[in-house]
Length: 110
Image 1 (cartoon, rainbow, N blue to C red):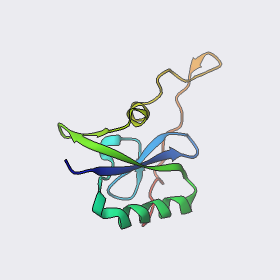
Image 2: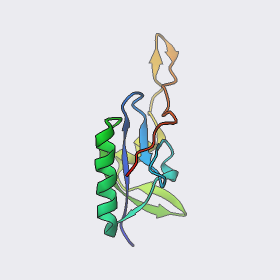
Image 3: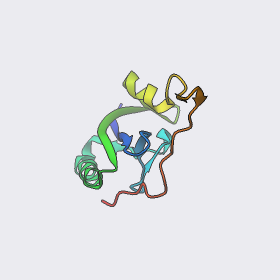
Image 4: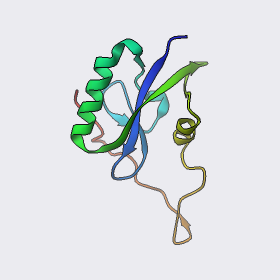
C-alpha cells in the first residue's frame, strides 16, 4: 500500500478542524482533502509555508491517511476523532453553541 498524506490544521478564528483541498483552499470536509504522495514533498512543504505565511490556519500538521472503500481514513485515532467533530456538544450559557465555520476566504495561494 502506498503511503499518502493530507494537511490538516485549525482555522484561527473559529477553531474548526480544516483540511487543504485540491484548489489550495482550507475546507472542513475531510473527504475533500488533497492527497499528497510521498514523492510530493516539495508541493506539500510549499503549501505548509504558504499557509503559515497567512497566519489564518494554526497547528498545521501532516497526517498519514489510507483510502478505504474510496474514503479518506486517517491512520491516527486522534485525527479520526478531529474529523468527526467534538465528542460532546459545545454549550454556552446552557445552550448548544454553533461555532463559526470557515468563510469563503479560506484560499491559500501556493
